[in-house]
Amino acid sequence: MATIEILLPKMGESVAEATITKFVTQPGERVEADEPMVEIATDKVDSEVPAPEDGTLVEWLVAEGDTVAVGQAIARFNLESESDQAPVAAAAATPSPAPTPAPAVVPAPVVAPAPAAPEVVAAQAPEVPVESVLAELQSPLAELPPRLDSSGRFYSPLVRSIAQSEGVSLAELETIPGSGSEGRVTKKDMLDHVARRTASTTVPSAPISAPSVKTAPIAKSSAQSKPAISVAGGDEIVEMDRMRKMIADHMVRSVQTSPHVTSFVEADVTRMVEWRNRNKKAFQEAHGTKLTFTPMIAEAIVKAIRDFPGVNASVDGDRIVIKKQINLGMAAALPSGNLIVPVIRNADQLSLVGLANQVNDLAGRARAGKLKPDDTAGGTYTMSNVGTFGNVMGTPIINQPQVAILALGAIRKKPAVIETPEGDVIGIRQMMFLSHSYDHRVVDGMLGGSFVRRVADYLEAFDLDRPIV
Image (cartoon, rainbow, N blue to C red; front, side):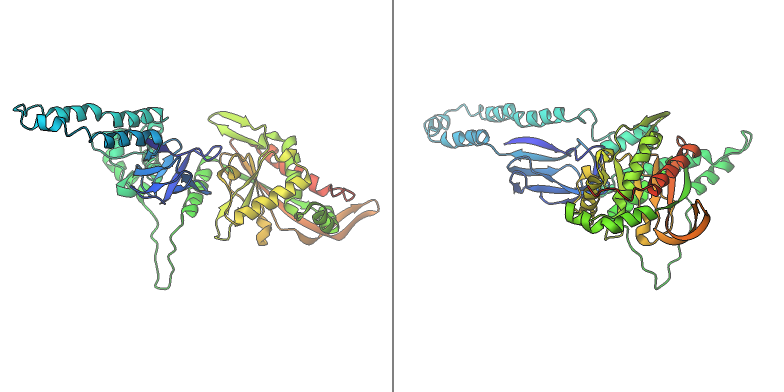
């Protein structure tokens, strides 16, 4: 049998790693091609890695709960093929002529040649490792040994990459306690260690003449101190699931990365509401999909992005990357209470009908847990409809590596001043708040505020005579 290494496949654009959640196949078990071998999870989407061909699993090179980089070897696998079985059949046929030389060997005094058999075996033994060596050379991570020093402690490529980028030495890496399987250091362990180290180096502010003995304990206590949590008898303790942990980590990193600023605009969307109420039944009959407010607001957002492309960007060091594509993310709440952000790709190239189809399809598959990794990757700007829960407004957190996000408040009837040729009057209008959070490193108040104002302008100028096609 030929032995190969199974690598973690690429699961979508910008997906660099995945967490091993469950082994479906155990070592020694035979599986057929395309049968699932292991369940994995990316930031928000679960998936499976199938068997490449018919064969037998030799061993897992990772453990459940490990975070693995794309391209990293996760298992050793024996392939089955006719060419592999042919030598076995030939070997089985050779014993028939064996009896003729056997009598000559037994009486002969030359018993010493017996060690020659182990020499032949030893000469043939390298044939198996050669294949694994070739597989290792084909791996994009072959130049990175899985163990960093003679202690034998395992470090994943992701952990090693973080250690290299943060300047963590091997000696320092050995001191980091691991929370993974068999004490392995995980991505979270590395990020926590880097955060503690950064805090310990920035807290001391005493002059140079101050004794270092006094400042060291202060840095240590401030970095490790946590507020005491008191638990009463009737309190319920709920363990975070995998997705909630990832969301928590993503939100914390976003706030630490981007200085958030939020601008608010109140929009009069009476014309949009009237047009939808008048045409929603005909729209569904004509196009076979429901018409909600979300695609109508998405259309206005896309138009405003064309006018202000600076909000459709990412930050790369000291460079601003203005995105050509407008891939609009739409935050959606799951039945579990978690959050996911599927992406409408090339939203600026879709009509209102196309946007409605995409919104309904992605929202439905999100609730059913049937999204693919690519469905949540590549977003360049995000909208979050907090009005779904009856909220008037919110201050959303930016979905990294984007630089802005828009929260849509609930549409409510309110008294408002209406300007007419005869003078100002007070009327009942359909009003909503738009809350625009943006990264103040690259988006200033003029750009962030002008953008959300333009979205409101497009909504307020909705054409009442617009056809449903």
